[in-house]
Image (tube, rainbow, N blue to C red; front, side, top):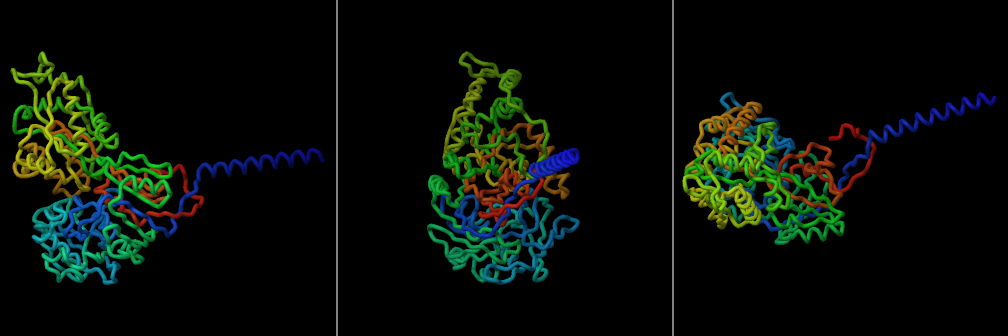
Length: 563
C-alpha cells in the first residue's frame, strides 16, 4: 500500500513539473498584445496656424501646419508605403505602363466617396492635375515641375491617361499630390481659388473630415466612417495652433492625450519630456551639407577636397549643432530611401589622414600654423545662413579645420541671400540645407547632373560624365535593382570627386502620451514594419488609420518572431 502511495506521489510531482514547465514555456514565448479599440480624442499641438490649406495654394515646405491637415483630409493617386516604395492609393491597381515607359493609364477605385458623399471620378484627378499645370498654381513647386509637361487625357469615368515627354522611373512617387473635388471647384477660375468658400469646407476623401470650420485657434476633425481603407480607431483629432513645446509638455504631464512634433533643428526639440510621455525620433528626408565651389581655386583641386572631407568629425558637429539629435550622413544618398545601397566603402574621419593628405597636396604648415602652398595661405570663407543649427555647425567645421592648419572664416547672411549667392556662384564653401528630398534618389538629378551646373541647383559646378550617366540610368531604368545599382555607382563616384561634404540629417522629434499606439515610427511597439524616413513632418500621419488611444489585452504572438 505504501509503495502504491509513493508511486502516486511521484507521478503527481512529475505531472506538476511538466505542467509548470509548459506554462513557463508559454509565458516565455507569448506576450500580451495590445488590441486596438475605437474611440478617444487626440490633440496635436502645432507651432503655427495654417495660412492656406487648399493644396492648390499651399506649399508644404513653408506651411507645415497646412501640410498636416492635408495629410488627414486628402488622398493622392499614389501613396508611399511603410517600406518607402510607391503603392496605389486612390487607384484600383498599379497603373498600366506602355513599353516606352512614357504612357501611364490610371484606373481609380470605385469605392471612394468624397466627404459630402459624391463619388470619386477621373474628372477629379484631371481637374486637380490640370490645375497643377496652370500658371495660377502656387503650391508645391516640385509637383508643378514634374507634371507641367505631362499630357492628360480622359478615357472614361474611372480612367485617365498621362503621357510623359521622356521616361521617368520616379514619376509615380510624384503622384502623391492631394486630389481635389472637381464637382466643387471646376467652375472656380484660378484667380478666385483663394476666395472660394471651398477653403472653409475642405471636402476631401481622407481618413478624417472637418467637424467644424477651421478657426484661428484650432481645426477639429472627426473620423470619416466611410473611409475606403477602413475606419480609423481614433474618433477625433484636434489640432491646436500656435502652441509651444512647453504647452505640450504641461498637457502631457497631466496625462492628457496630446502629441507634439518638431524638427531637431528647432530649439523646441531640446525640451525634456515628462516621464508619462514617450519621445520618438526618426530621420527626415532633408540634410545639411557643405558645398565646394569647384569653379575656382583652390577647390578645383580634388585632392584638397578629399583631404578636407577626411578632416571632419561629423558626430562632433551633430552634437554641437543638434544636441545629438541628428543622423550622420556620408553621401547624398539618404539611408532611408528604398533604393539606397549599403556596404559601400565610405570615408571615415581621420584627422591624421587628413593632415597627411594636405601635406601630399602641397599644403605645408606656416609659422602661424596656417598651411600654405606656393606662398598662398589656405584661407577661405564658409557662407551660411542665420539658422541656429547651421551657425553652430559652421563654427564647429571652422574649429576642426583650424586644428589642421586650414583657416576658414564664417560669413552669415539671411536665407534668401544665401540662396541668391548659391545660384550666382558667389561663394567659396557654403553650408546649407536641402529640404523635402522625397522618397526617391531621382531628386539628386537636379542637384548633381551637369545640366544644372550653370542655371540649376548644381551649385558646386560639378560636371562629370560618369555622374551624368548614372543619374540618367537611375532616372530612365524601370527595374528597381538596376536603379539601385546605378545610384550605388553614382554614390561611389561622388565620394571620389568630393564636390561637397554631406554632414547630417535632422530628426523629427515626436513626443506623445505613452498610451498612443500603432505608430509606424515606434520601433519598440509597432506591430507593422517601421518607416525608415519621414518625407516631411506631415508624413507621421502616413498610417494614422492604425493609431489608437484605447486597447484591450490578449495573449498571443511569438516573442521569437518579434522584430
